[in-house]
Length: 529
Image (cartoon, rainbow, N blue to C red; front, side, top):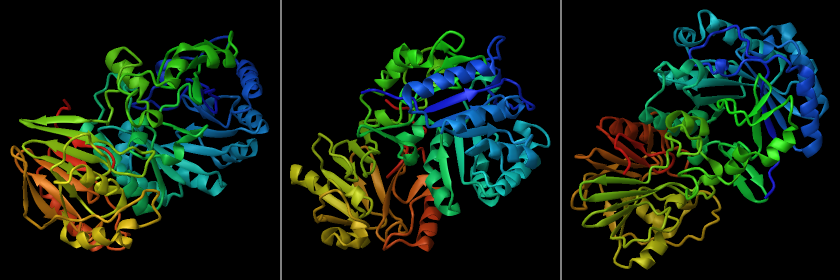
């Protein structure tokens, strides 16, 4: 397969009027001899060589301090290439926005680090919150589409919903997040969030998008492995690709005129003063390894093509760009005494769910989004929607003695495959599911070492259930709760917003060390084995 560059990230200056706590800006200074004319020449060459460039992201430093910014945007506009300006917004004015618009700018990405003046200004500097909000209003008035972008860290992790709400209120088209990467100013600061906080954050993004009716995305490759950011995936010759797209469709040019993998990696792959970009694109070892996903932990992953992990984080942690991303969310195996838990994460290129397998004296499978190569004694369906029952009939055929269980209010729907199951036309062949045992509030499923109690949690469907193991504090939530502020929708035929609120309140009282949701990431205080 041949890969074509489509997105170029250009840091055009290392100069900035702010000193943010998390900034990567001091990674690479500008260089004598590297000029706008050099940049323009090399861009002209690659545009001519491939005819595939679609977007150029212009950043810094603060790009509004670059004296040839408008010339660069106009040049790219004449070439038919869309441009995104990534700015802190504090230097924007009506006159500046008019010049940007007349130059042909496509979109603005406006940085903000909090929903309140206190939090934002503690990260970006005193007085910046008011200036950023005013900038957003000016951008909206100008008619240039814009997104708001936040780097998540300890200081603002509790402001995520407030930031989404603020973005909606000022007229942003979307709001994006990315977890802080400890480079530049952030390298020596203890500002990163915990893995539990990160998983909760990711699992709640779709809930916030529904609640505030705005596009919400996360720029981390791991977000794609959870089925988030579907609109960011690319279709190349029938193959879905996304996540980290270094060498697949993107690369970076830093403010010194060097070609690098991305803006977070200070590894020189080429030099604009010497190299034609297409030669580097075709022949550089780093790009070749990325195209083949030659990264530890990725090659056998079901979501390898749509994620790829973050190479910057791997290097920071291990000194090796191709080690497994330490923030990888594909946690597959846990051990609790004599009980082994295997996680089959949702394959996001197929419309199915997470499934879980507990092996003890009995073998319990949770939801039928995967066929395990094991003898199944008990199959529990957390609710009746088609993506959770896809392989139920096949599992029963392979395991005739398997007992299939579900909540009382969903049993009839499963036996009839009514509208509560199908929701929409499914690409899967579904068969009616015979239920062997109805599960009610307080019922116990005893595996031997682990004993799960049933919690009735209507809201997503009228018969939704969760399972709770009190000793190990394991909560299996189906599509009721994803952790944090994330929860299933209530717009299905038997859904209820009122019942969902009651169910979430019930679950919030439980002490939990491991959340196993029907979609998105496992949230764990346990270490994967």
